[in-house]
Length: 374
Image (cartoon, rainbow, N blue to C red; front, top):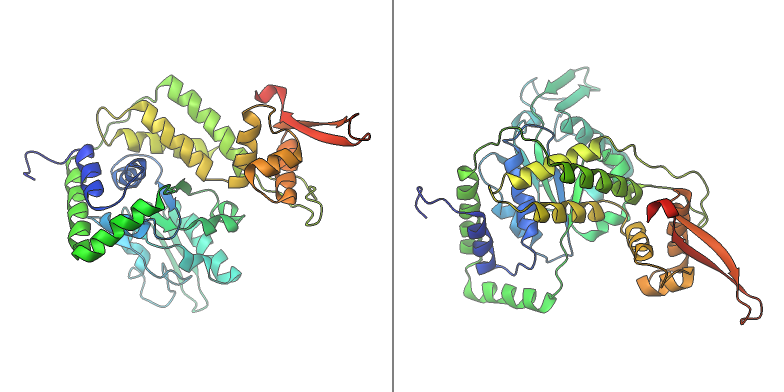
């Protein structure tokens, strides 16, 4: 494609869809927004693309390895700053102002709790443009720089790490990328394998991404529309609900302590930054599409079970008992009951015990949205 006719956002979609089975082009926008955000003012964007194994996440991330990106395949507590090298030669120095790409976060999640906790602590500092500390070697090695962006791939098993968001300090946002038609995805993969052009496909996608990014010019600061600002406030409040944590009795599902809910300070700034990065992709980028992505990010970035229970109750009173909600969502009874108790403790829903005169006096607990949440 000629330099005087740089690729458009639609060209990027078309190129990906020529080679790979892509149901959701918004996942392309999300990845591009991280790459573009490096050139914008404001917070870094750390986006985790979560999806089932085989959902071309690694391939998509590989095609995003363009200028000013750094891929990390193996991450330990000594990767960023070893404590052994000469000051100024540690790996973190190569990351300032760049975009970190990690194909599979499972490698980090599989580490023992102590090592994993150390890595997460370093991530918190890295997000703020800091790295290093005091080491057993007697060296104090501290670095400051422009915070990097981060684009990560992971399977849905990341949701099993219930306290992940607390560990990372909510620096990251997730975007769930489910493929609905696995048969079509399989058939397209088989076509690529038989034709032997996978390498060509990746290179062509990488080339169009690189050309597209070079054609983007950094935006000046702009005022977020008032209606967008109000929607982000609402989404931030929802994100706090979906990220709330609590301890539950393993046998009953009852709460065994006060729920923990984050103070919505960093989250609205992150969502505003993501909105800016998305709208930087194209002068006519639809506001509605950007808000749809933000809404999906919010639903992806917390506990999926809490979100599903809450969304079902928002639909009305058709599934109002614990048993009805459990059957509709195909969940374990105690799991459903625990999330209902969490939402109740957060004052998002209420419950009422009603005796059923036609059922030998048995009573049922009904759940419904709190009046101030309708």
